[in-house]
Image (cartoon, rainbow, N blue to C red):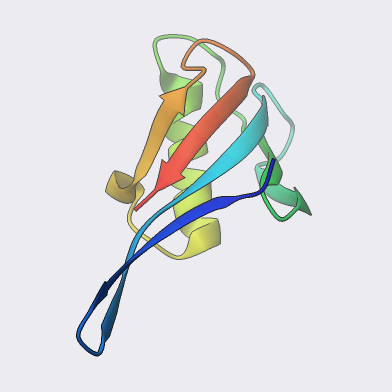
Length: 90
């Protein structure tokens, strides 16, 4: 399944709308890192435990740093309580 990227074309302006990626997460890891497997699949390791959304917040922050964007632009679309997630980046 290819990475989904949406663009909006208006006059001479191209506006980036969103990108959807698939992420396998590793909570309680020794070190935080983001590994790119291929065009649309990533492995994200975070130190936080999967309790009360702590790991999900750490995953959003790690991806924000990796993609050089604000964590508010990272949204978990599917898999909030799973290790396999679909994430949308605006």
